Each structure stands twice: as C-alpha cells, then as structure tokens.
Amino acid sequence: MATAGQSNAARSPAAGVVVMHKMKYRDIQPAHENSVLDSFEGYLKESGATFQVIERPDPPDALVNIDGEPCWVEITDAFQSIEWAKSITSYAAEDKTHTPRKSGVIFNPDSAACEKVKEVIVKKYDKQTMKDLYLSRGQGILLVGAYTPLTTLEEIIEQGSDLILSEISQKISIFKSIYLYQNSQQGHVFSKFL
Image 1 (cartoon, rainbow, N blue to C red):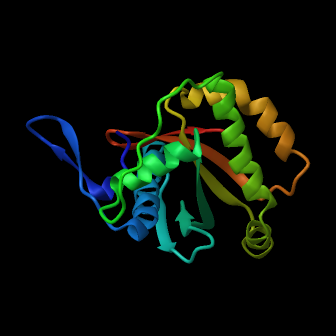
Image 2: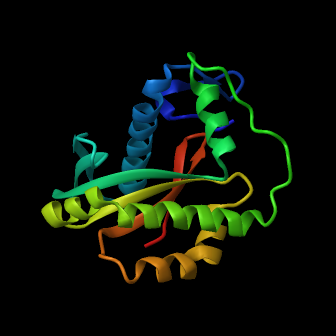
C-alpha cells in the first residue's frame, strides 16, 4: 500500500516491511509534502545539487535554495480516480473510516493516467496564484505525484508528453522544470518531465 509519506511510515528491519502509522486527516497533506520534499532533496543530491527548504508559506508549497539559488516548489498529485485518492488518504487517517476503492475494470489505464497528469499540470498553469508567484518570484518547479497504479512514470512520459506539452506550450512558462514522482519503499522516485 502506498503511504502518505515517509514521516508516517517505518521499516521493520526483521521483515523488510513498511508499517503504517496513522495520523489525523488534517496532518496527511503536510506530512506528504514534507516527505516529497525530503525525497526530492535526495534525488537532487544524487546529481550533485544542493537543496534547502527555506520556508513553507503555501502557496507555494516551499521556498527553497537549489545550489544557492532561490526557487519555489509546488506539489500536486494526479490520482487514477477520486475513489483511489479517498482510499489512500482515508487509510492513512486515524480519524476517518477507510473507504476502500471499489473493484472494477480500468479501461486504457495508460491513456487515463496521462490524461489525469495532464489535467493537474494544466490546472496549475491556469491557477492565478501560480501566475502571481511567477510574476513575483520567477519560474518555479512543479512536482507531480502520479498515483496511477497500473502505469509507470516512464509510460506517462513516453505516451503523454506530446499531449501535455501541446497543452502548456501556449501558456505562460510558470515552471522551469516539471518532475513526475511515484511512491517507493525508500520514499519517492522521480523522473524529469520538463
């Protein structure tokens, strides 16, 4: 099961299993964002870059320094469906009843995943607060969680990049980079999209 973030999961050394620690529903999003930022820092460090969170104002989700240069980061998630999102978040919440995703067939999961990722990216480009951030702070970085269990990041990039790039090519260039990510046992794995 995908966790809401590293900060609420612990690895059992004997079993090699991730154990979920539940939290209040209102704490899930900040814990998730902190976990994504921690994983993104690790991802950038692998390429020799430095990353430091300066502030968490919301919006954006973080003001950061990358290699000593100021930047801002926005985090969003693309879920396969609303039911999938409710299932994941209610599972992690101690004060909510878990709402399991109903079983059923997902037709064309790759194209559906690409469409969901495109929708959340375009929504961020169209959001006035993102435009205002671009005008006041310059270009930022967008981190997009792909909660699409039947489709990999590589498949989304391979099959959806033309569609997504054609949608955002006529918009203000708010983001200098877009990274897709998915949960992994070590936190999150990232693939650069733009």
